[in-house]
Length: 235
Image (cartoon, rainbow, N blue to C red; front, top):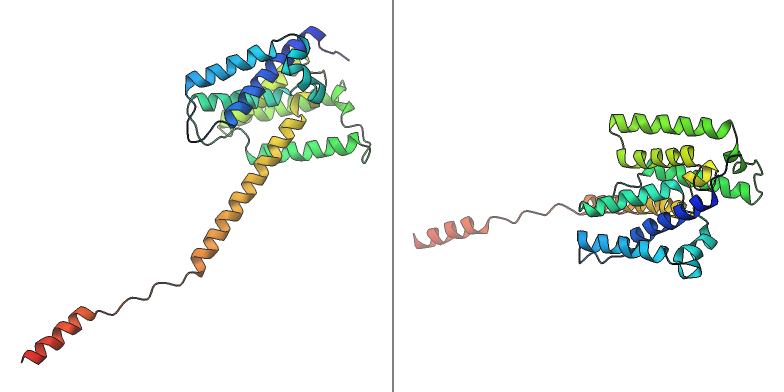
């Protein structure tokens, strides 16, 4: 089992949590006041400075106790979202429904396996010498094909970057699953699916209301009749 160096893990953790923190701050930014590039750069610089603080003064210390390290895919998705903000995109394409569905199902299976409901050793297979590399290669091939065909290029590039980070440096923990999913990314995927379901429900309700509304009854043409009646009286 080839694990990453501890100093490399710590450096990755601070940089990764800084990117995640900056993305969260941007997500909470008031919609009535669009974020400028100067404000975005300032948020990123402050996030990096906060994470660079020593010991318990750094938010990375406490985030590490709660979540260990952010997955490479989460960091990649956050970088993609920051790039969208930098370019002024309002509608995000970072978490498509297909990727969100895969993450939700995979996270649920890993959780059920970790608490003992399945007990199939799915998480520990991420340290394997055969299954993990084969899964990583298969996922990388899918990402390359998606990028070449122009399907969800941003998320595919984020996933490919997470796989490359794992293959080259074994980050964040030496386990393939930790490079592809974590609790925050799983929550993001769940929220994306719920938001998509609410939008579909709202559209269907709006379509039903439009179908239920009766067509307006045309008013009779009173003006010509009144004019004709007045003319007959004059005669």
